[in-house]
Length: 240
Ligand code: UDP
Image 1: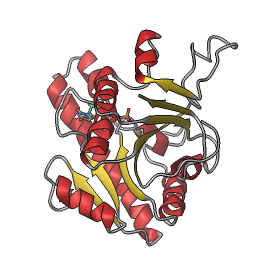
Image 2: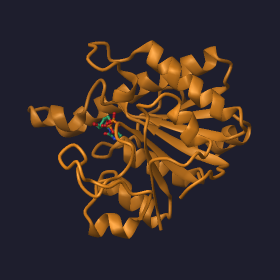
Image 3: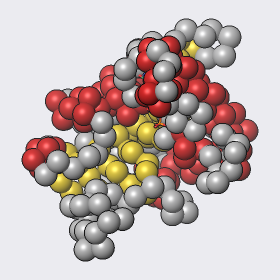
Image 4: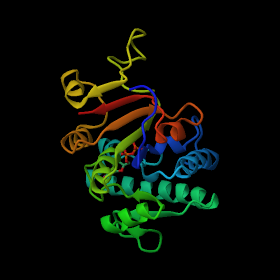
């Protein structure tokens, strides 16, 4: 997949860790969030409709807490609440840049966010508002990658953009194997047969079953989020 592609409506998945400055004890770095917001704004100005799902791993991960003795469901609800904080941080920075946004929460929290209502979310997107989906799916035992796959399918996005630390999907772990080769494109089926981990199994199968392409790309390079969203070819495209 060389050159550029043109998208109409996309869903950007950011991990919670993406909002933290590496090595810092602050869970959220406002300057980093500002940089991400500026990139989203630049992509948005091209007329692209943008939905965002932010994770919560910079604050809390349900599985980690449950491995240390906390009840899993409760720990997961706490993780979902963490995603709300991240979503509000992103909204705040986008609004400071005059980008119209709405946060929709899967767990009702009327004083800080709209409730998630699919048809309203879709309407916001049509009207050019950046919609940030908070509180994951609203269900424990799921991930924000699954949220991204689910919401992208619900609002009819063209593609899920998964921003990561690595610049795509490799035939083997590039940290362990210096000869690892990166795929430009790969099919869902080949990911399965080669046992390549793109997202967790629930998220991956949701994308596969709904024919929702995934682009895995690195957000570590400056301006990469904008470049990916506007359709510059990068990372690995997973599709049918
Ligand atoms: N979570 C959940 N249901 C969801 C989405 C998230 O229970 O639908 C919880 C889960 O505990 C997870 C935490 O929220 O560990 C943070 O989400 P995630 O780990 O996906 O964040 P990321 O790794 O993307 O920062």
